[in-house]
Length: 523
Image (cartoon, rainbow, N blue to C red; front, side, top):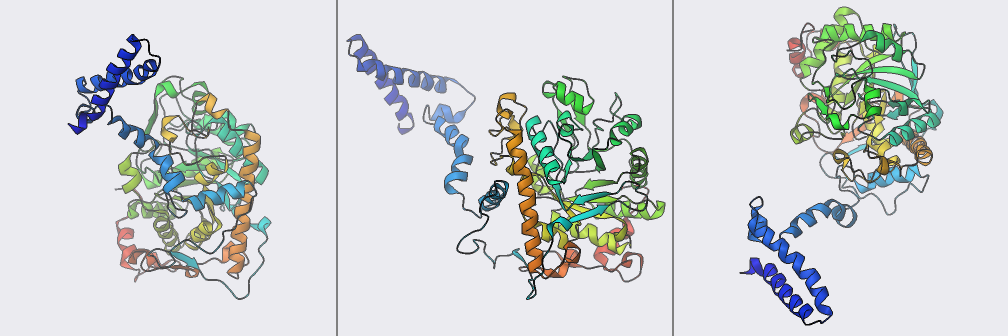
């Protein structure tokens, strides 16, 4: 039978090889050396019971595993076009690499995008362009009750934890932030030694595990928080409610992966399973969240405090807004994370099917704050697949005051999108705790690339909004962005006037979840 042909050839070769060896004919050694192992593999395939394919197609079926193993590389290097997103296109990755290395950043012969495809977005330009000074591209974050407002760049490093990224990767990112005068978000994994050693501005993210400020049983410890939060390197505090790539999902770092450095950063025992619950224990209502914001602001000495989330049920976000109004306490900022955001590891159901994408969530959050009449009290950050000036402009047209990028800065320090983040075998030493692999990442060289990428992206952004006739990002409006066909639903195309949610005649797509929102509970 044809499916046993490889087994037949290997067994025949083995017999011929053995016969030639017995006859002292030298080529027989080579034939036997190849055929005997293949014959042994074929016999094993026939006897094992785990893989049907191996039993039905001995030896040759192993080629399937070989080709599946190298499929990502074959696709990326030989098949993928410059415009294929997987999740970032070659054109996007090349742009980051070029900007990080200060290389030529132009493309020849025109765009490769289909400008007539559904969802294509573009901006209106002006016949009277303006010059935008890159040094002015900063935003003040801090409300009326913030004693230490922060002057932030409009592009910062998004949340990525030590543990997900290697120590060298964290060091390179933070040193790059120091060189470029922008901020570095710690992710929920705590403020590690690698975040501290280069002195870059820090946004300390507090997740449900309260890493770095937790009691022995995993609850929030105000004394530990106060000690860390008042470090001058920490500029802002961000409460993580949910993450775009896996909103509503907790996590666990197995004990064997909790080494001494990770245990030190997170404040957990070495070698013991490290749990991140799906929700916070410090609060369980919108009013509780807002009270927690006020408490952290006091404990930090008046630094900006806000929260990050991926929008899910609309009435829940509106319940938080109602809690702000009821208590007259406002976060200094809110970061909207799109479901297209990245992660080291996420269940397929969550990564593909849960949460609002950035465009939808950002527009909704902005309209809700405007409709509630409190937009001027709160800054909005945006994160989710932002790597270029055009991405930043689009986010700001939808309501963002600044942008965060995670994978963009990963590309800047050498990530090649191998998508091996969850295996601890990242080939570039970025997303691994393997000491040998991360040793190949040179902190000095990569930190300069981080600063280069940041600077050149801001130049691209400044040139773009200048071509639109704008003097700064504060002049970007929703009307300047154009989407081919109906890329938004009717609800998300709705525009609210200041205070409109509090009046009669508000569009029902917003009025209905607003009526359902309860500041005393999320349900």
